[in-house]
Image 1 (cartoon, one colour):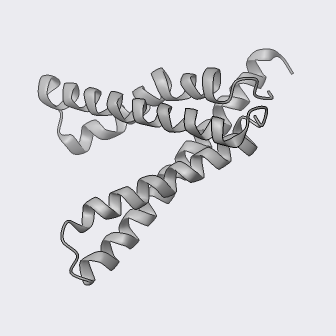
Image 2 (tube, helix red, strand yellow):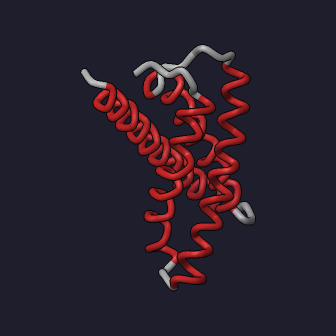
Image 3 (tube, rainbow, N blue to C red):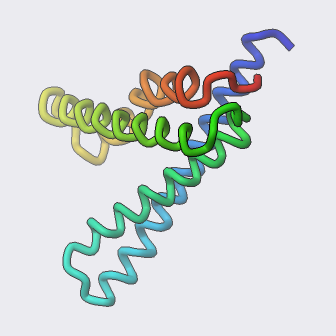
Length: 139
């Protein structure tokens, strides 16, 4: 198998990991939102979003470390901290790109989310994880 095919497999696994994490995030968000709304919790969506984001991040980190990148050369706490920094930077870039697409380009907020997620993942999140967090990943 040539290098391009191996890297393509790595990208595909990372994309599947990201998709799985997004699904987990959404499921936890919806479940927590339903539970907290029934309990009468104020600003239930804020807590639900936080729980969903954490569940999705843990899912993505574990899948990336052990399956997508197969990168266990660093201690888990070091890699986890690097992943958290990358996640925060990804969030900031996503917010900036959403602002641009919504406020400057004029896209509807519901429409802008998917292209913004895809562009930020391709332009920053995947390269950051590949080169920095999970450096030395098996291909």
